[in-house]
Amino acid sequence: MLQLENEGPQSLTQAHETSAGANAVTPAVTTAAPNAPELYHQRTASRKSRITLACKRCKRRKQRTQLTAATEPMEHILKQHDLATVQYLILLGVHGQRSPYGAGAWAQIRYATCVCIEMGLHRRRSQSGSPAQRRDAEIRRRAFWACYCLDRVTSIVLGRAFAIADRDINVELPNASPDFWTLTHRNEYDPHKGQWSNVEPFIHIIKLDQIQSRIHKTVFRVDKDVVRCLPAERAKLDQKMTKIRDDLDDWIKTFPQTPKNDSKSTWMYDPESAYLDARDFYGV
Image 1: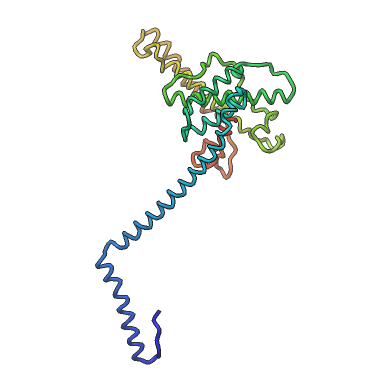
Image 2: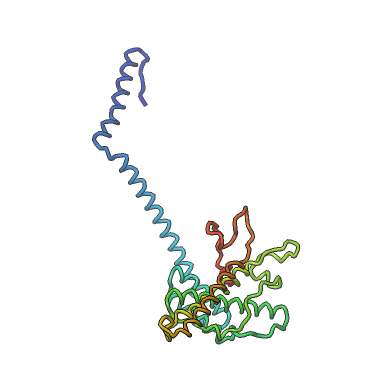
């Protein structure tokens, strides 16, 4: 800031001249370096990029720390060959879909499915028993169907064989009954509110994966050339594909109507929604 020793006319004139001289520097700099504003913005953008990159590195470092803590008891858990082993491998497989770890999501989910088969989770059981036993049976069903969905997704994407064939499965689908409400909800079920079960989308995804399995078996098979076949076989194939298309249309028409918040869906059917919970996908 310019300081004036006195306020006489001469001093004011000198101050004006000095100020004008200082302002004249700006066009001179701009003339000498016409790209200065552009360089400034580039440096600012570069600085922001470095800050963003540093934040991402910190986040990845935190994720690696969490993964290290989660995998520390892995050897002990895998030796048990029980429901905890299945659930552990499911979570590891979900993580591995975005950030591969170890053998990869496909191998981990396949291992989990093998444990399910060993435990008989793919077969129907008697529904009798105490509420605690029925609750335990429901958890086991959901764990198996979570393996089923993940196995179908990873196997189809990678072009590999399924861990289990549909013809070997006769266990019931997960149950959206209020009896099992607290498995996926924090609050108790209130019959007066007409609440919506977040297990319904999981059941709907299972049905879609079952249709995908039929498509894979009918069309994308390696033991038979479905394109160059006899007319009679082609007619049968067309009938099967027509039935699959009809089932896909029915699947779209019957998807669960999720509750809305401010006229927006609170689940996966709204692409703009930020609400995404793996528990809703796989029921674990």
